[in-house]
Length: 416
Image 1 (spheres, helix red, strand yellow):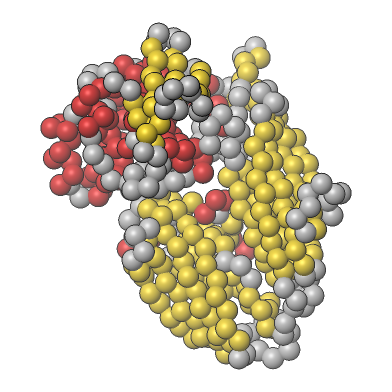
Image 2 (spheres, rainbow, N blue to C red):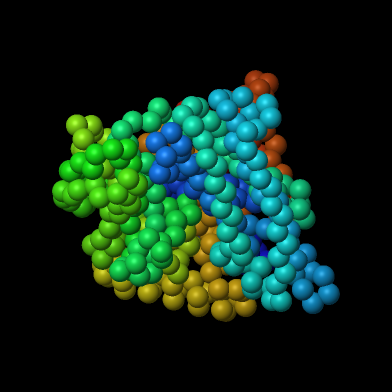
């Protein structure tokens, strides 16, 4: 239904016009992996009150929209298995030193709930470890489809020192006067533009003396520009001390950012960094910039009808954007945000798979066809075609149409 609706909208604009559109770049988002039960996760190292022990934290969740639901009488049901394992070194073929598996069954009364971008459950695994090298393997398997998505991440814990600093991770909290009892980790480092209390958390461990510390941190946008720079001094008061770096959300626009921190204490220097993704809470996670999202809509909206929007304030652009997609989906009797999510999923998937030097994937011929037509029913690849350049064929059986892409000058181009 979503594919047919998008194709109906897109064919209002001639294909030739669409292939001539020029747009700016987009940012990659992991949620675009095709056809798998893609989940959000965060794996990080933290400290304990023991000088020789560390904590490996594994947080994960999967939204309903990434699972396959089946109708059983009046209910919609899904089931998945999440498995985590920690291995010494790089050899994941051996018996893990830590493993945990959980099975979750989900029942929803309404179809709309099965398409929610919010998770039903959160999974938190913790593992105490000593210094050394470790590999974490985390996977989700959709029991209704048998499809599995797995991620691997390698960590190194260094020998403990008298003073040390943990990794940085993104957190939010509900009570500014009681941080330690009200904070929670942000899965996938996605921050809502409307959130009140958000920051980057790390821990400092001091074995014997409690030294003073000097700290500087910078927030850098996706263009490499420093958009916030702060520094302050403090004193270690406890053996294990939390420190949070507040994020001035009111001064930042939606986008992708990196935090870089330099800390000096006890004659030692430490550098830590992390990334976070600032999003409008009610828009797709694939929309990192409202300006880029509007330009990417030139595939489905005539330029003359949208050019005035580019002169609006960011808040007015967002309201126009939401109203456009809401009106469109209401007219087609679709659930809220379903078309928007699908369209920008295609944008991000194209950037991941079809990008070439000096051109983002959604600007390529393959990317443009994917954005307009959706995932092909069949792909026929001919990398060693006799007496001609390599080429690929995308077939859409329901629409009785196919597209042929010739490989030329480093990219696949649509054959005339």
